[in-house]
Length: 385
Length: 169
Image (cartoon, rainbow over all chains, first blue to last red; front, side, top):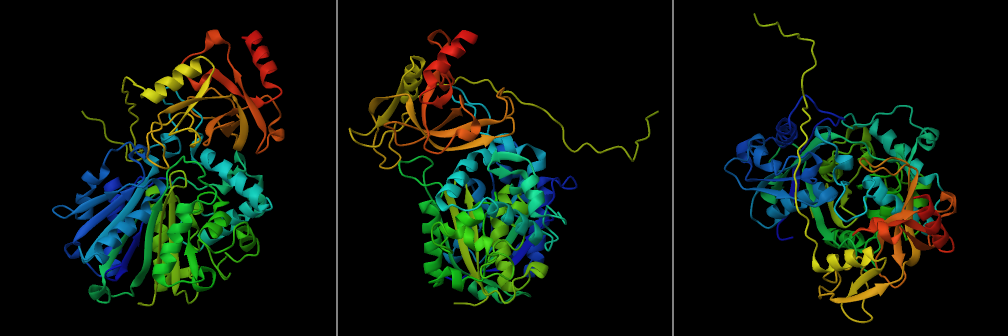
């Protein structure tokens, strides 16, 4: 990175299954206004806008960024749309921050969203195609075989996935913005919920949410001028790999681990398990917690589930994962990655409220997308390097 | 006189307006050969050169090297279950009834997997690594589609199942 950049404003909407009170424009505007307010800035202080969302098929509105420019104060300003499927929220934050570290702009507003209630995102990408088998049973159908293979390789006991489902929903109870609020969540409730894509049960899956998340990212000189503490971006990276290639390992993708290594190297993190205080990691199905614990270097291969089982990923554990409730509690797809990035920044700013990890100084935000092919990640710190 | 609006009436938030688009699908050279081949009950794959990774369905370009994968090779209809899931929910607009098993199948001699169904045995007896064989529809019913295969079944049961299904039809 050539210049330093920091998160100086964070804005999130309430996440619900249907935000019928606002249009797409109203939704992104709500998040953007909250981020600007947090940063103590107005629309005129913003140099450029970077927006992201998941594939347009999810709402059936093509290139919505064109019509959203007005709602984001972007008329007459440079605006860029990022496309990297489910990882887009993370990639959008990285693209926005890169426009600051490169010296191109001093202050960027970046926003991501999904309004799943306006369409049927679960099946939008599973439509029949000519001369092909019509067997895509949604995202869960795609990832279930990978999870089964992880369970086989690691020998993890069957209750580890349900433990993640319970932990993240308990965390969601401490986050008033989180979509799913299940006060009586328990291991029994999860294990008795219907099996959807064996071994993934209903309560081990993410919900469909409406919502938006926004960040204001600022250059070093301007970062300390706001009313609130900046979260310094210490490292950021993106990696991708092709969907089908001989030897590609969807369970432990090379692009994911290389992305993490790059971020740690930039941030001077030698041992993530010890030096990272918490992580917001993209876990749309419960078993992705132990899988990503390994892929991101928090545990050796085959050992991730032991950290989950020992409670190390709970708030108060040695490496808390998804204190906000995670994707398992809120999945406004396009925003889901940015929510991870935003929540990691909130933690090092000390503004995470009830789900705050005490004294968090270094946190990681992570997102993945498509067939576990696209990865985006950053490390943020309360401390300026 | 205009009727007074009922303030308690539910607001219209979403209007369902299905849109149709007719289009002509033109298969690429490799895909055309694959579909032609599969109509005749034969799998083919592609590779850059002899000994190089084999992609099935055939790819025009090797995803690893970017080189043209012009060499087409015939593959057997046997392989193994690479990974799988048992799906318990219906797929919209698909008549298949849950629970059904969708597997990533790795054909003998191929280097990437493709999705197809597994049947012909108890779902609980399916395992990663299980040897399977295609259960083909009778020749007269075949079209340009991977649906020419009913499903993949345990290797020792596939041919008998194909005969049985042909009789039922």
